[in-house]
Image 1: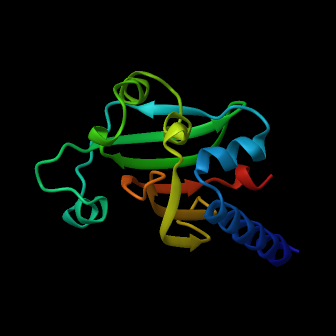
Image 2 (image 1 turned 120 degrees about the vertical axis):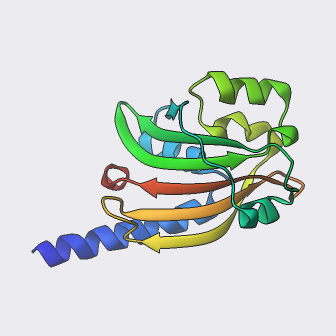
Image 3 (image 1 turned 180 degrees about the vertical axis):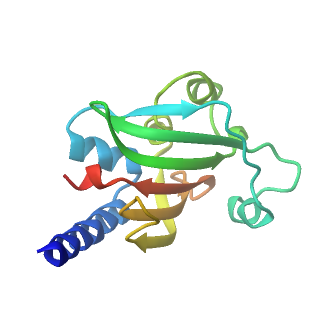
Length: 160
């Protein structure tokens, strides 16, 4: 019976992965699944510089400012995703930057006016324990310009 539950969870994680690949942002998908707004619990003390490879994928030089945002995305008090986000503030509006720096709105919701879409870089079914799925992606604006690189780890709660 445990094997069936694991297989079902794996099938569910595969379906979640397909849904994420088809969704413009993780936030949009999580809100559809939850049926309520998703909130970002931001760790404002977390800092992590982008790697040279990330800077290359973002299309920026070594001196361009990149902001790191570590969040837990929750709906109705239930953690659905633990995510890291390296974004280029120069590619966002001042209002978007203020919302990200000061608020609890998820990145995907803040940048919605830029018509974002995802370019997948990596997906790991089964994720890294205790997560069921890990996605790494570039978030691009409607013109195809990289806004951010994200690493998203999905909790078992997102499959319920």
